[in-house]
Amino acid sequence: MSLAGTTGTSALASKTADIVIAGGGAAGAACALAAARGGARVLLVERSAQLGGTVRQALLHTLGGLFDDSGEALHGGLAAELTARLLAASPHTRKRRMGKAWVLNVDPEIYAQVMEQWIAAEAGLEICLQSEIAKVALTRGAVQEVVVRTATGPCALRTGALVDASGSADVVRRIDPACVHEGAALGGFIVQMDGVAADALRFPAGVGLAREIRQAAANGRLPPQCASVWLDAGVRDDEAYAKFSVAAGTFDAPAMQRTAASLHDFLRRLPGFAASRISRYGSLGVRDGGRIVGEYCLSEHDIKRGSHFPDPACSACWPIEHWDPLSGLTLEYLPSGHRYQIPLRSLKVRGFSNLWAAGKCLSAEPRAQASARVVGTCWAMGEAVAGQLLGLASRNENAPAARAVAGACEHG
Image (cartoon, rainbow, N blue to C red; front, side, top):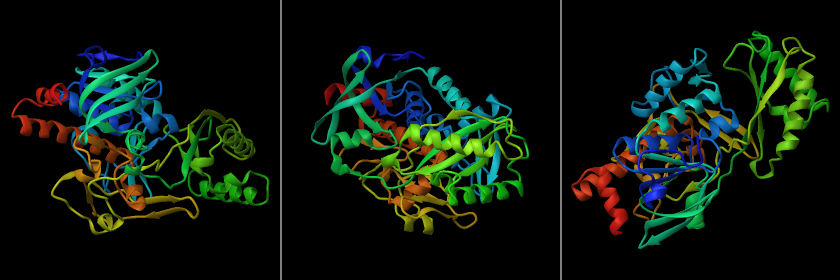
């Protein structure tokens, strides 16, 4: 895929885009696909060289938020289509029970490839990689123009709406830092291993292995970061993933790779790991990089009481999986059959008419965000924002959605 891959009208060439989206992860991809399918001209801006977001970069192989607690699809629309595409793309993709929740086991690279092919085939959607939104021009609380910094230089575009799907509210923070609550959660560092015996992590072997690792960390035979490491079976029979919890603010990639190598050396002396090797290191997975100040703040109380709203974006039911920087993980499952809604107002930045956020940086309390931030819910949020933007355009202008949003671009 090229730096600015185009599958339709070129926003960078025409200097206008109906909707500009920052972030090529779950929420950004869903928003871009839904908006383009609705007839809008969409520019998707991604800082890295590839699409796929946290799943690809941090090596997430268990996708939460796609199923309810009985294993049934939680969402229709693009999230359901994503599941179908992933299942068709690889025989190793499968639904799996994890504790009391259900996830989709998928190779992170397969996920990214499916996303890239899907987006590349959508007309009216342009992708701008290794780029970022450097500046936003506002008039009376409305985004009028964005400056996209690309590898070949800056480009200014008029736009009808701007969506921050960066995962960390980077764009909103650039506009006004007071519109962002800074995140406070441990990050995740994941290492993939292959050549692992198929039964190395099966019960009760996995329990005994975890105990040995913790004892080794306690007596100094392993680095202290290994004390809370979690080993999980992979997508293929010979894979395993080691998942470390780290403080995002002090993350040192080379140091954590050395820690992972120490753990692997230890594991290779144990049954099931003698022929194993480290095949991939992930980047830091940021669970809470910042949350917008929205028109509504989703609360922990909303989640626990199963709140419904007059402006629902989507439903969700993932456990409250909070990685506190001081106390570590607390995992609180919701009652069987329990669901709550995320309102569209939690995805709209307070004080702005056409500035939105989707995904992990929604407006929510920390423990509410800890439930709402998972992949399937982010796909549903992104699609909901696109639908709202196109629906508003149709109602406001009494015209096809793309022309209505384009008119906002041209006439401000």
